[in-house]
Image (cartoon, rainbow, N blue to C red):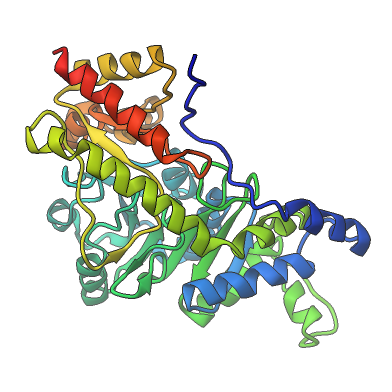
Amino acid sequence: MKNKINFNEPYITGNELENIKRVFKENKFYGDGVFTKNCHQKITEILGKKNILLTDSCSSALDIVALCIRDEIGSGEVIMPSYTFPSTANAFAKVGIKIVFAEIQNTNMTISIEDVLKRINRNTRAIVMVHYGSFLGDILKLKEICSKKKIILIEDAAQAFGSKLNGHSAGTFGDFGCFSFHETKNLHAGLSGALYIKKNNYFKKCQMIWERGTNRQELLKGLTDKYTWREIGGSYYPSELQASFLDSQLNFVRENISYRKKLYEKYNEFLRDLKTDGKLYFPDLPAELSSNYHSFYILTKNSHQNLLLRNFLEERKISSYIGYIPLHSSPMGSRLGNFKKDLPITNKYSERVVRLPFHNNMKLKDVKYVCSVIEEFYDGI
């Protein structure tokens, strides 16, 4: 009997334990030590950008951004897609910033620029682009709009570390880029994240927020003889155990992406006929996008077919998953004054997403089997 094909399995390089042993040898565990600095340097090299802060999660990276710009936004608004993880909205809601949810484009489930333009007004202070799966959406158009209208651009690049568009790294197009190193991501530390800050003045403020609201980094650099409370901050960086784990993984970003590309291309190949016949849909990667191949998803005809397909896969020991539950239609979204009918396109297409198993422990034959089961399902309806 075939073993179950899991939706996700954490990536392991084999070098993590050696790094963890070094943490015990260094005898410094709480964070901001040698491995945190190593990660800062390696992420800087991968992204081609400085001003990096390692965080304990992508959620914390978003929290730092919200704290950094909340005074600048004041009574203004931030626009973001409803089709995203709650952390995207939590960061801004918890500091009292008004959230305006926007539609997605049904081609790749990222924010609709057309709908964003309808929602921009004199109160718009920031816009969040959420990169979904292996797609960066219309980030270049959104960057142009934000630049012209002097709107802060934030990238929720939780799923996009290692992706590039026209040679530029995801998460570096805007004023801020937030990344996730959760164990469900390509590279991970169990739980961790990172933040890129474009402007030096923002970086200085974010660094103090990251350091529990203090200017401790100035003390460490010899720029002051004592440090004090300067900003509302928090404990946002990971322990050295987490950083050491991530440090070992960052050495294998190319190998990780290279293998995932093979899995992605096999899904593309084996499901192409079903797409051509109009039985299901999945977007094609743009030529200008160098993807990190984070995930592979398909869209079914409707929500009922979605449920039937996922049950069919589960019966054959294949774990699949839905996409996001739109935030505007959630209980919290309702409490913020939203209604489910507000975003019909988001409602319609979010119910059709089936995310297929995708991780570095999968074999190409596993992808072939998953696709054969999907073909069997569609042959029977």
